[in-house]
Length: 386
Ligand code: BES
Ligand code: ZN
Image 1 (cartoon, rainbow, N blue to C red):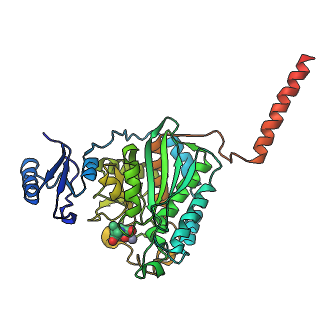
Image 2 (cartoon, rainbow, N blue to C red):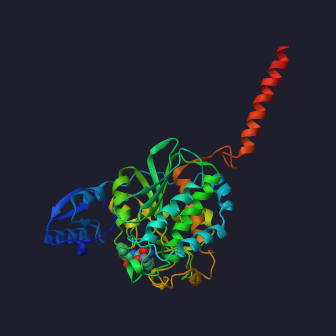
Image 3 (tube, protein in one colour):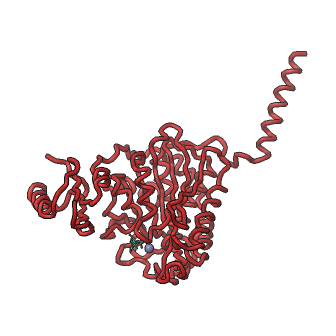
């Protein structure tokens, strides 16, 4: 029997020209009537809908036809996760949302949207002096750049795990809008930032490569993430998208979006919530490619999107000047749950260790102690020779 890919029909979005259909069996060029016949056949054979994806781009179709990467989703880093979680600081997370949402807007073509990239790069860079950790701006040709922090893996540097969110915000006046985007998506960027800060402060050393990405230009068609996903898809084993984490709109805390995501990785994320987050969760769907996880999904990379509420209960102030911290009662109580989840995901996906020094690598007293220790040994050695 054929093994089929996740259910998704994108035919509605494709052009009337050539269409490329990807199933687990590979990619085929098809006409609309042939696609309809395929859908009917799958329905008859498998008793469910879909099981294929339709693209108007052949390379995207091939990427989606690649089998999901074989990842072992075991939970076996409890000791490290539990050492890291208490260091997450709700006040710091709140402070980052406040700073990002104080910018006039973070539109992908505005001066303040560009400044947000530089601001975040400097913030991430300040978390460590480790020379193996890189923080880079990715220029896509717009004023705003994506920001990428990479902590190379010690054992499997060629396997990348991505934690992402979008840096841009949008309002009706585009470039000239007052668009604080506190929830959409300063909350996601601040959540990522707090996870990165704590892992680096704990001198975390991942076995797989850990990448934090603040995508530019999500609000104008997932444009930054499509370019980044294309670039890194072949090496990426999992992606977690944090887009809107600080508005508690529903009865349960965390909602895993079922569409444009990986069912296997979502099951693992559910286990992470139960084991480490201490939050309630359920499943819902966006109903369309609502955020950057879809860019990874379209490249065949297992993606998940833990969301702040059910879709129907979402924060109605987004994309307006009312998307401020006021809507979240000026606290980050909801977002901190997503920071716990993000940290657990990062550690359990990259299977790392904590380095020996959990203070600060370059602390001057540490070097003085090393120097004095060395002199002591030399001194004792010369005494012994006498
Ligand atoms: N954060 C939103 C997506 C979202 C909104 C998810 C409400 C769930 C509930 C995202 O930034 C956004 O606005 N996406 C666009 C689509 C995108 C492809 C331009 C949207 O939802 O209209
Ligand atoms: Zn939005």
